[in-house]
Image (cartoon, rainbow, N blue to C red; front, side, top):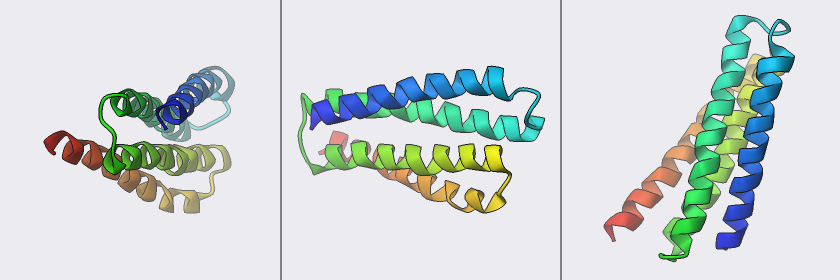
Length: 121
């Protein structure tokens, strides 16, 4: 499983860099400053949690258990829901995508909570 999370984290990090460059160079002037800020927030949390997935892969090499595994999947789901909904909102202007964003935030919180509990046990 640690290789799975290493791969997911590496792909997510790659995509975060690519989307960040796309936002900085391809979207500036095409999106309003507010929507560009929304896109950039998606990229920032995408990269933070890509690194969290890689961290999870590294931790799995030392500690195993369902909490670590759950953290990795929660971070992955959070990237998809949180950042994905912000990308969709910024690019389409469809505000209903904003309703998905908090679900991704909850997934991020679950991932961090799992790591906290695993560290305490």
